[in-house]
Image (cartoon, rainbow, N blue to C red; front, side, top):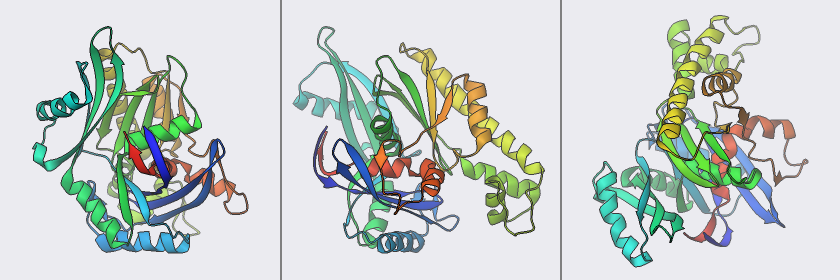
Length: 353
């Protein structure tokens, strides 16, 4: 991938909050310039669609104003059921031939009307001896992309890149950890509504899947079983309280445990499917990120079911920042939510795949 121009501002519009990050290339590494999070009212984003345009626009304007970011060019990302990612094994061919072939392949593999999606593809590897090539095909529904683009433009910003959550996180992993020969890892992003799985072998994405389950399932179950408000359920989920004299009900621990165990079971089945259908070998380690990653029971449950070590992914591991501008403890607490946004902030104005 050829990168040119200055870095874009990473803008991650999630189900529960909007995140913004600005970085600068510094020698061989990166320097964190700006980082902010603004919560959204419940139901502002539902199934990837913007339901409360005003709230998202206000959040974006507030973040850019308070962070004093003058740059307008931004990178966005999407995930969920409107995104389809397929790895194709094709005969080796020239670029212009592949351009024509990819349209036919898309019609065979994409369960949407081709006129309703944006298509992109990237050659992962070529094997001249076997006359074969691996190509990654990505399709995303135009209406969801337009939904995001419109709300960002309404906030007086200029969207130049729309990425996929899984690949934004993969870029962050590569920046902070690098790859070892023969290494197979799983990158899990557990958000409020969607859990994204990306299995990477030798630095190349081999398997991706989005599970329609995330942190909101925990909140909803706490609400239902304890008959409390959304705000109270969110606070209990995080181990906190609403009032100074309240304590977290003892039932919360069991409710959280049941929900995360169900999610861990879905994750395990995805890992099992990959290992049964791939000749790459077994996943050696799982890296966990996303707004729900801080729940200790989730990490323990995934590790127990998958029988693979689970570690929190640190998006700032090799990113420099000024201790006078950023509180180290606060940055560490917000790190799981920052991975997608940082991955977007690594994108540049002119990129050619």
